[in-house]
Image (cartoon, rainbow, N blue to C red; front, side, top):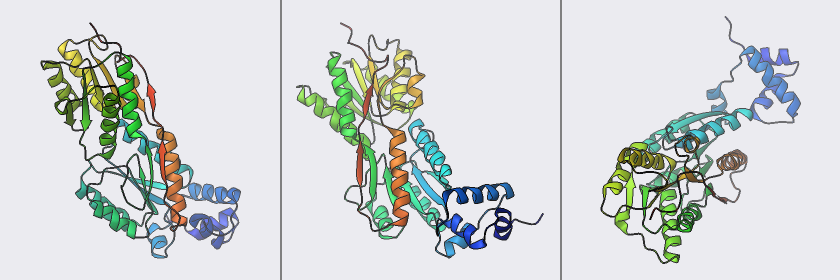
Length: 336
């Protein structure tokens, strides 16, 4: 079967080859209605423009990259799905890369995305080596950080006020009468977790309560490690009456540890998470958590990325979204 060409699309759509090319590359004065008609013809005829040829000619490839730490974390899988839905509606494809927060993987994926001549990269993963982003920012390839921040870097970023989110969690537990509180954190190299713990400790400090360093446990970002760390706290001499977890995965692990130890949640132990992923609504008891406005963050980050691809000289923006406390069933006043 003969492959469909741009000539076939132009003939079927009743337009010139130049109009089809302009519609594909977002150039010229092609109305939205006409562009949609051309894309419908392309879909019907299963026409695939040559990405390589477009890249060689310096044209848009309508492909973007998305770097996330772990696609198995519901927060980042929800981000990936939202990015893909939004990109698809705008005629873009997405290459999703799971980095496990490891710089060697970040570098490897960035090289791959450059070879694919993507129009821009959304970065939602921690990058320990700032040189990686510095080198990337020096190129003409647009970058937008999402749910992460590149300190002192000239790149757009869209993130939640993690410090305030940590403070909201602390205020909620303080309001419930909790004073013996522990924290399950991700690695402090993850800036979002660092800020959440900083905000949490600050709110407790203002209330005259200190969180000792040995009550803050660094974990891998997984249910299993959350369960391990919480089990150690529950077995300890000074068992806390509440645990603040820096993401929902760690909180679910803590719920599992409590259940296995015969500790009732929330009667004997309150647990609060962060992110408000879909998992927080299906646990038993349902998880109190701090929500990030994920859909709005993705929309803003995507718009910034596409705009940057067309105007590389624009002033870089740092957009900080407000978190929201979602109270469910896993927190209450401490047992006497």
